[in-house]
Image (cartoon, rainbow, N blue to C red; front, top):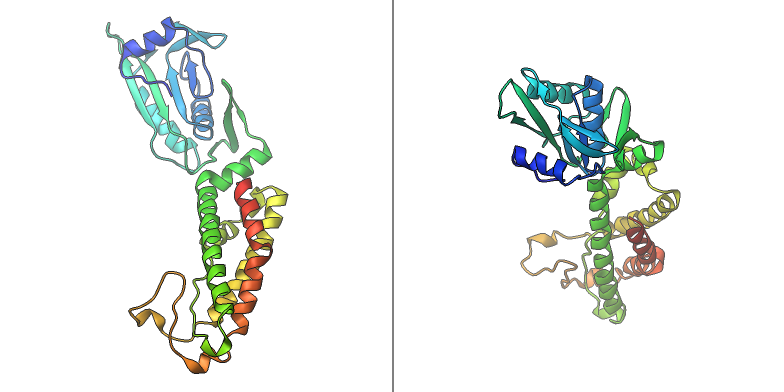
Length: 287
């Protein structure tokens, strides 16, 4: 995104022949309302950028100014964006740079952020930037944009946390298996995380992932669901009221449980040391 703080910065773009590109667009005039909304949509659905009204360009190179004349131009731009783009998004700013000779003329700079709630559409079409051109999005591009960087980041973080928890839990259960049955004591395991996964499933956006990733996600979280169900079955006491506990497990004296509570941890360990870690690593790599 270019840095424009004064009219002189716009003149420098012209003098330096700064070409239009992914994040910069010159417009001689405002055009109609659809043109305004389309250009803003395309920038918001891509990397964000700067839209400058009142600059003449030829072959994407700026050649001079074409002052925008009239009252309430800034309000018109804001109103068109508010009324014509769905869903609405925040952070867009419009800056007028008046003609020093007066005449109610100005160049208008619209700063468009990359939207975290993309994709946005206008007139029932989604647009994005392709180089210096704003064009309709393809079906797969729309699906991927709907998934959104926020959901991807949340799932990536959840999988990383699960891999760490998997390692700690397997280490604990390996220690438990080496203790003779008579010396075993109650353990409480922390369930694997599933919030980001459930959010994606509930939103109906699972289909936005590539087919291979969907298959791995379904298999991995089926195992996680099974493991968490088994972990939940081990919760026999109100252990959180005690003072001595750790983030991964808690051991107490309970001879009655220790004699028969060893089979379920063995199943959990078996499921955790199977394909789960490999699946999560593959999914994390693909995100």
